[in-house]
Length: 230
Image (tube, rainbow, N blue to C red; front, side, top):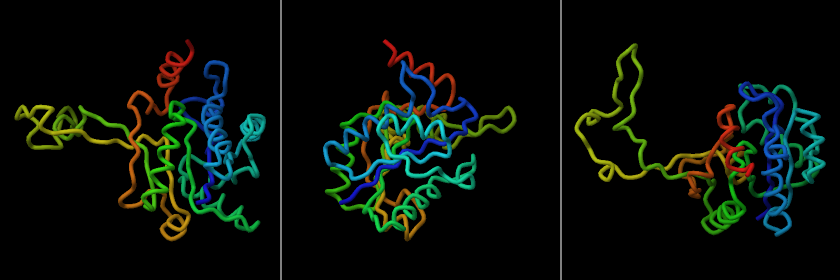
């Protein structure tokens, strides 16, 4: 199966300016993901790696780090409201015009820098073996469930489950798995036919919860630096 790795890294970010190239322990954030993707290519597990960006500075840095940046993403698919499917289809269209075709896309978010090489290789192995249309990465959560979650209605907490005040023990409600946004793998045929990245019944690769941080706020960035800058 021919895999195309897409690393999305647009300019805009409300919480952290130029988030994708912000300094993390002397390295731009996007480098953590580019380095892993390059390992995959060196191991011949993927066929191509590109960074999809609308930013000349991010493109320059990404090229220097070894990733391909064959185009700048158009402004109309680079805004806050733009969806991931838009730049993925744009990338596929770009290559297919050159008669380059791929079987599946691996989407790696640079804002999830603690994913590991093992996470990636295990995800690809599972995807190759099972033949599903898509795969997502998750982490196991033992605490969060409907019994302790509420909607805010003025000053009233409206429960999502009528048993919220019946003292159900954690052992009785079990674990749930939360999509962490670090890894997506999707067949190109599914993308083309459905204009979606995640299928109805995706495969699941479970990551370590501590590695599932998604950098979105300055507090997230501070936490990441406390982990990595030792």
